[in-house]
Image (cartoon, rainbow, N blue to C red):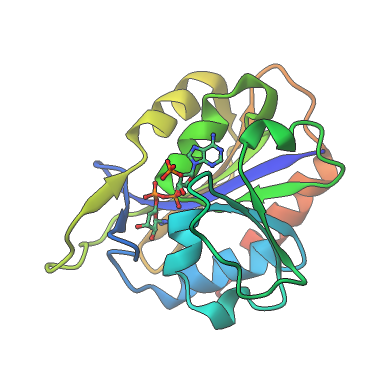
Length: 189
Ligand SMILES: NC(=O)c1ccc[n+]([C@@H]2O[C@H](COP(=O)([O-])OP(=O)(O)OC[C@H]3O[C@@H](n4cnc5c(N)ncnc54)[C@H](OP(=O)(O)O)[C@@H]3O)[C@@H](O)[C@H]2O)c1
C-alpha cells in the first residue's frame, strides 16, 4: 500500500481552510485535486466530507474518518465510515489522504500510516478577505520538513506552486510517483 497525501496550503501561514470550506477559489486547484484522486480511494475527515459538495464525491470511493458517530454517508455504495485510523494500517489498496487538518495531523503523526508521498500545493496569493475560522496544517508541515525530501520538479499554475515530497529512508512505489508527476507536467497545457 502507498499512502499519498494531497493538500493546498497558503504560503507562510499554512492555512488550508475556513470553517467547513476553502478560503480561496482556484479552479485549476480544484481540478488538480479531482484529477489526482480520480479512481482512487480517498480518506477524509468528517468535517471535510460534510463541507464538500455532494456531486464532487458522488460515485467516488471515500473512507470518512469520524469517531463522533454523527456523519451519515450520502453514497452508501461507495462511502464508508471508519472510526479508528489504526484500522487503515496495511489497507490492501493505495490511499489518498484528502484532509482536513485533523486528518493530515493524524496521518503525519502515526508512524504506521505516515504518507509515503505528499503532493504539496502552496498558494502564494491572497486568501478571501471575509474568511473566518481559519484552519492550518502547521503541525503536519513541521513533520513534512523534517521527515521528507522534496523532488526537484516544481510546477506553477495560477499562483499555486506544487512540489512532490517523499518519505526519507523508505522505499516509495515509483509507479505512483510517476503517475502524479505525469499529471503535473501536463496540467494547464
Ligand atoms: N486546502 C486543502 O487542501 C483542504 C483539503 C481538505 C480539507 N480542507 C479544509 O480543512 C478543514 C477541515 O479540517 P478539520 O481539521 O476541521 O476536520 P477534518 O480533518 O475534516 O475532520 C476531522 C475528523 O476526524 C475525526 N477523528 C479524530 N480522531 C480520529 C480517530 N482517531 N479516528 C477516526 N476519526 C478521528 C474527528 O472527529 P472528532 O471531532 O471526534 O475529533 C473529525 O470528525 C475545512 O476547512 C476544509 O475545507 C482543506
